[in-house]
Length: 214
Image 1 (cartoon, rainbow, N blue to C red):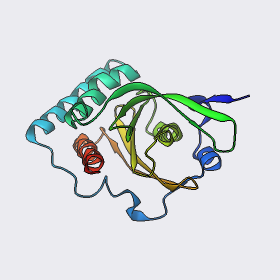
Image 2: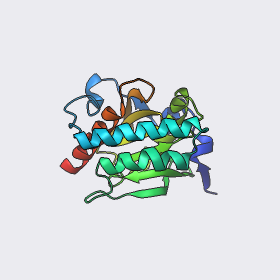
Image 3: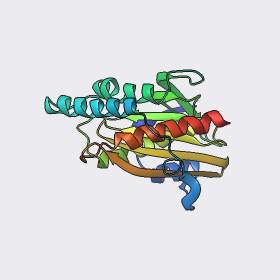
């Protein structure tokens, strides 16, 4: 009998992803250069918007912990809009159901991803603001599992995990089913005086360029 497994409850470690799907961290430094090199510049209007997002985030946080929906409203949605992901040729889906099977086994993994854009080549996982930056690491297996569901793994697939105040980017690519690799960016935070949302938006724009170049 086929077994359906919830991604959120059952894929909690990177070790599980390696065992189940052969997913390994990339061994070469140049595997994930997209978040580091030739980033687009942000306009003065972009910078003003990003400063406003940061100010609103900390104001809302001062009133109490932020849930996923509030984070999407005041942080994620304006970031995706500024990156151009709500405009053609991009397709945007919210809370899309994804699933994929384990080769040679009667298992199907299923879950709902918080935001899916870029023609199934960019995935976003949002967690509660009460979680610490360390919890971004706990959300990585979930994000990578969602990315494994992409039908375009032979092309780079990108992801972002955020709790509103911290951000980390991911890249996953597969040359063949037995050779699936991923890598991570640095963590970007709203805590420093300098607004690191500038880098976050530039990286999002770069991902858009990479996908539309194909």
